[in-house]
Image 1 (cartoon, rainbow, N blue to C red):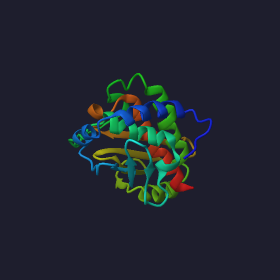
Image 2 (cartoon, rainbow, N blue to C red):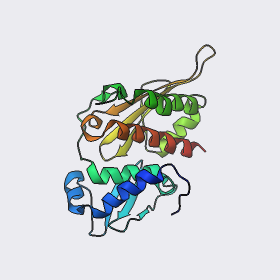
Image 3 (cartoon, rainbow, N blue to C red):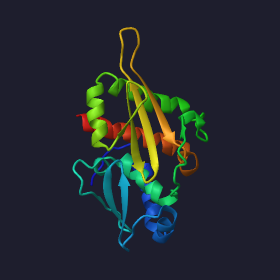
Image 4 (spheres, rainbow, N blue to C red):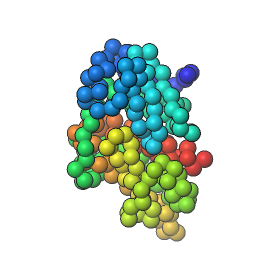
Length: 205
C-alpha cells in the first residue's frame, strides 16, 4: 500500500501510531465488534473489512472495496476503532447544523458535501440510483431521488437529490441518524458524508 504526496498521510500516520499502541479489548468493549486476537472485522459502506493489529493491514473480500485505495477512509476507520462508540439510533434524523459544533464546520460541509452531491448526482438521477443500490441504499421519499445508507454499524446517512431544472440548479440534502450527535465529532461527520459521496461517485464510474 503506497500513497505518495498525499495530504492525508500526516493524519493517517498520527492515528496509526495510536492504533498500534491501543488496547484492542477496549475497542471490542466500546464497539461490540469481532476481534480474533489478530484482526478486527468492520462493516463500512456495504463492504466488510479486516484490519489487523498491531501491525496494520487492511483487506476486504468484496469487489471494489472503496477503503482499500482511499487513505481518508482508512483514517476514518482508525479513528473509529480508537474513539468510536456503538450507539443504536433512536430513529430521528439531524441536519449537519443540528450536530454539536455543526455551525463551526457548516461552510466546509456545504462545499465539500452538499454542493458536491448536487453537482455530481443531480445531473443524472438514474446513475445516482444505480450507484446507491450498489452501496445497499434503501429508497426514501425525499427529493427527486433519495436513499438511506449504512455507513458503519448503526450510523446511517440519508442523501436526497433534486434534479437540475431549466430555472434551478441541482440541489441536495444530507441527514444524519441521531446517534451521530453523540458518537462522532463534527469533522468526523463531515468525513463520513464525504466518504459516502466518494464511494457513490466511484460506483457511478
